[in-house]
Image 1: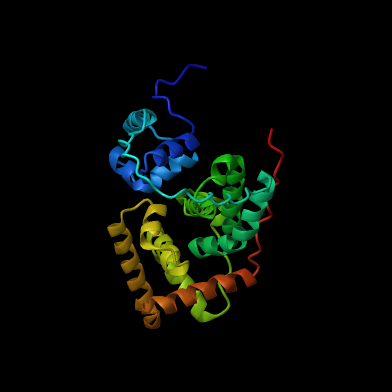
Image 2: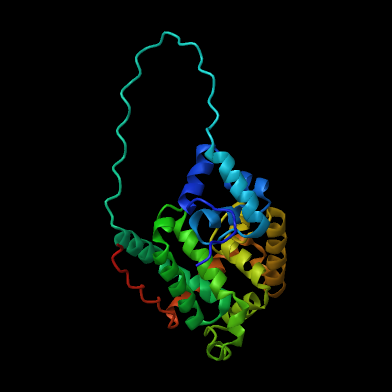
Length: 279
């Protein structure tokens, strides 16, 4: 197969180590390359591959970082007391990759199915989205395992798949699911599903899960200002139908209740993907 003319890049894990060796944050790298911080994290975990001019800029930056790191001039030695013995390092994890993956699945999958149901209103699509996210996580486990937030990695993949517009073209997802039993819950879910997907996702992350604005902005690949705008418009749309939910705390309580009710109404967790030994 012919070699790609694109600039060569080190493996994703090496990209992260180069950034950390120079004490750079994902936001600082993003500014220098001209992308969002979330994009840099995706490049460092292997979820996405830089292309075009962004790839060229990223490759130049990594090449620069791969050079010798700046060394501070040593200060004159001063008499001091002997340094204490270093504290023992914490024991390293003895979990195998399959065990670590199983632990992530057990921790994240049930609530993630509930979350994707609120995003889509479709139980089968919710389970399908979570299943796909965990299958991809297992395929890329060496990268996911060292991600600062493996659960967030899986959540982002599941959300992106669940909100993909091409699902509307699939016959199996054209017929709406049975709505929640309680009228108020049906109305709230209907209002949520009427929001633009980006507003719906922002509202669920921030008000439903309690994720901070900077983290929500990074996960949705938007600026903080755009995230605030989406959040305010989503809250206004909900409060127009439910004035009592103008209080963010009450809104979070109702979103949590709706997720819990959804799980009781035949919203079972997707079966765990089969993990095969790695060679």
